[in-house]
Amino acid sequence: MTRVAFLGLGAIGAPMASHLSKSPFQLTVWNRTRATAEAFGSEHGASVAATPADAARGAEFVITCLPSSREVAEVLEGPRGIMEGLEADAVLIDCTSGDPAASRGFAANLNQRRASFMDAPVSGGVAGAKAGILTVMCGGEPELVERARHVLEAFGKKIVLCGPVGSGHAVKAVSNALLAVQVWSTAEALAALTKLGISGAVALDVINASAGRSNASQNLFPERVLTRAFPRTFRLALLDKDIGIATKLAAEAGAAVPLIDLAARLIHEARLELGEEADHVEAAKVVESRAGTIIM
Ligand code: NDP
Image 1 (cartoon, protein in one colour):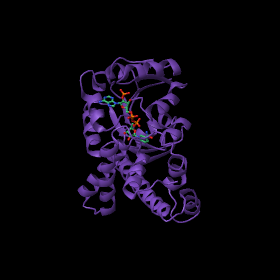
Image 2 (cartoon, protein in one colour; image 1 turned 90 degrees about the vertical axis):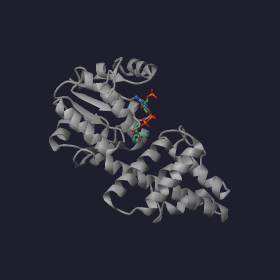
Image 3 (tube, helix red, strand yellow; image 1 turned 45 degrees about the horizontal axis):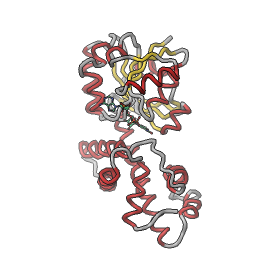
Image 4 (cartoon, helix red, strand yellow; image 1 turned 90 degrees about the horizontal axis):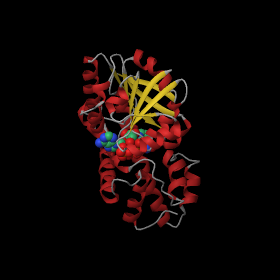
């Protein structure tokens, strides 16, 4: 049995962890709100740890899936944090969509303790996590990714080594910058067509058989905007964080990204307007209100 600890049972963390509750894995979970961990433990037969240190004790692989690298730092290095319980030779797999520079710091810290770090953010949403078919983008040593492969394959279908520590986080941030551009631009396009008297359903039917199609037009808008369902699966605040990381990385690299910079500003404005709990697709509501129409 491979002993795994999973910390952070949020919207995507919980379905990811559920795949690690079965043989050949022996799972211990920790969550800031203990009731969530207790409910998960009863449903999936996992042990519940009182602290991050207790969760890490005895684990070969410790997985974190938290909002950002700031929370990872707290849970890793804070009082009763992972560091206090981490075994020498353990591997910390950070599935948070985090910040490459912070991850390089975590890796250096862990290496001093003879433990190892890899970033392994995911894509595919809550549905992909439930189905165990996420894309996992890894940053770290190739041997480490191979050692962790069976763990990553429990929830991932496509596992790609992107480069050294931080590379997975960089690719994830940039991929989500594209998601932000797609959501915002698709909302603008459909709002404009609605105002021209063309229904969103007809427009999407054509666009999805044409060159303008994207994940937003093929999946998000038909399922969430036209239906007005707007399920809360991935917070707009997290998308704002991701595109913020992407613009910071581009600036550090000296690469001009004016379109992504603009999308970052618009997404941030939408977050301020809609609040911390809004879903990312609800950004379309801000576009609608600015355009003075509802996409239907
Ligand atoms: P949620 O907001 O649903 O969950 C966040 C988790 O982090 C909860 O378990 C929460 O605990 C915990 N947490 C928050 N703050 C702290 C803290 N200060 N200390 C300890 N624990 C804390 O986020 P998601 O599950 O949606 O996202 C997790 C990561 O995965 C993010 O980096 C996100 O960008 C990424 N991601 C999310 C996707 C999605 O579809 N949702 C898709 C791909 C990547 P508590 O229960 O106590 O609030």
